[in-house]
Image (tube, rainbow, N blue to C red; front, side, top):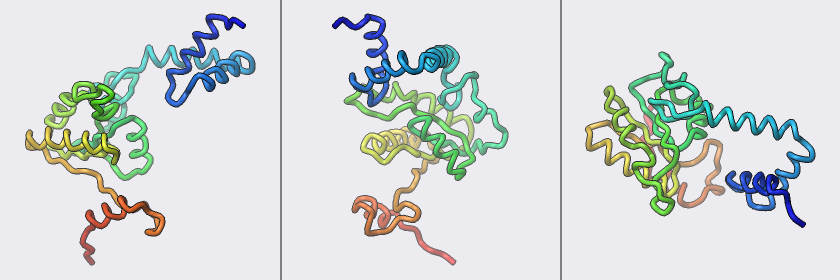
Length: 199
């Protein structure tokens, strides 16, 4: 049986989404066309609008519809702190935790030579310029993966050479976690990064 070329094109287009294989893409396409045509049109229009209107903030590199995003324009933020995160989802998580009131720089990835992602792809020259704008502390909040650690180390080396204060978020036991359920690597790191208790 021949599948209409426009349907094949839709299935192939849906496969660009992370974690979506041929069968999932096929199910999505059939669902949209058979059960939710208004949803399919809304999705198409939203994608078209987003691609046309969303770009990167000139300061923090996060997604924005304006040249400089609302967070970077806010006078309530502490401009002496600059937190470096890998992805916009990490920034959202930091904001939801309400533990940080400084500025951000979103890398939009992490160093991964095997995937062809180097310093140029992460716009590290923009990060250095941003950190040099005013005296500040740069907090590295990349993930604790091999790539995230390599990225943090590379950025720290780059910024320390410019006499910029750099710190790294701590690792350790989760709040409410029990020792018997924690993996040995996390427990070892928590012991290594222990702090003195003062009254």
